[in-house]
Image (tube, rainbow, N blue to C red; front, side):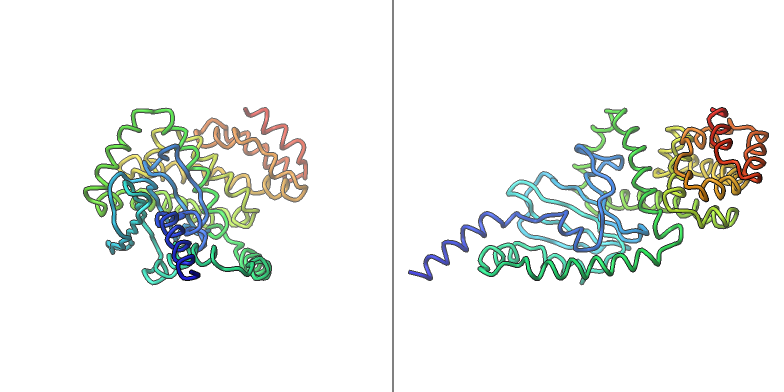
Length: 333
């Protein structure tokens, strides 16, 4: 009788959870955070992007591919893996995992699998006690690690990717015709997942390279700015992208001739930022660094802030006049 009862429970749970793969839990187990989610598609024509702090580890997701997939599969392709998991009898999730080893994928699949869900349901002992301890321990480790990452790429890359993604998402949403292209992409994904994910992984690689190139220029030309708070450096790169125009911004992920033009704009932008090093230091000293108007830097990107204004700002900074600096920035708009 007991055996029959347990069998019934197991069958019920299995039937309920056989398609219970949770991409968010899987991403979290890999130490990744969501930075972009489309409705239904984001600026890359997929559903979701998860990354780590330095963008070296990525999980790119198409959540509901139409078609039948009877069992999970891992496909090794070039420098990354493709994971495909059944979601329902008529759909499956397809994912590209960059910078993540196959054994790690398999390990974390087990920890977020249907079988763990079943065992959790059957386990009469609450897990809250162990979770409390582990969360405190994990929080402590995370805090220590973040304290060591006082360099541009370690703390800014993810934030920059998130805000640039939001800007590109706005362009995507404004051009509804691209949604049709995304659905066409779904057909390509079903027919040739390797080719589909080749293009998407390259697009994100282009975005990552852009952010890292910006970092290099900041470090080369503006040492003191490289040591400013992460929020400020993120603001610099995000406002730069906001000021270069839609066409140039799209070229960041698409590559091609437009990307070379963007790199020239970075050179010009950073050279002007260098002239503001004293301004940044002055505002940072009095806690007003976060009050700089974003539109000032967008105009700086497009060359609409004259060198005379930059020289005046430097003079005000040399005399320790943060309020005058803020007023001058507003007047320049």
